Image (tube, rainbow, N blue to C red):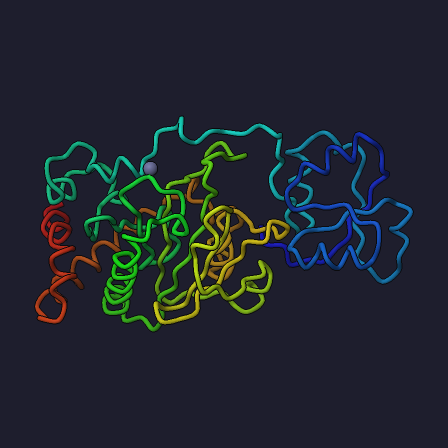
Length: 337
Ligand SMILES: [Zn+2]
């Protein structure tokens, strides 16, 4: 969840409680008031010993001792009290190279002979390829919470935009511009936002089910409010390749807007961060942000239907030749579904 409550957790400090609480990504022990403020600024919640918890005027949450050692119950407790604990990191590291990658599978049309046949017959609509360039393809966002929400994906298994080889950067920006144009025109929108969670180069993850294959989320008419940008300390970035060795979250409003990035390892960025903010603002129930649990098939269907209509209309204009060529197989295949 998004942590809006600025509270201080208090616990009787024992070796057991300390080692248990230290494993939560978004909690941190504090010894002094300046430290408490620093932890809040990093989008985490501070923990103090009961001795320090006597500070007046602060919002103190006492952690019941019975929850120590019970990670699921503890996470639930945190959510009920309005803050995020982060995930419980067991220390186990998963090598994502050993897992199958569905974004690579889509890049290969899942064995279909041609892209228009793929778009006509592929099982799930959400796998339809709307746009294809030599090195990229565009598909609907998984579990899109609103219409006009897509993903730009490199065909090659690269782990972040920051790690893209130079040769494909220009093409990537071209794709971003085309997708922006398509979304603005189809949904009569006013702004298109680009967001990415980049994975580090090792492909190792403490989360079993991370998608490490790079994908940029693109959505029409959704922007993060200032307070949410501040929450994850987004700062201006002139060169994305500076983040090639780390995990990061990047954010940009419009292809002409400033690219901003959160890459400070001390700052906690919630999983599916923009989706969590979006779900909250659109009034969804908690946990509905999670694409693993909610497919929102009807939203995906509407998005694809509108895009097919919009692209057919756009194809008539001579100024959109590149878009027309790169989306032809979608219009052809999807219209036959
Ligand atoms: Zn892949």
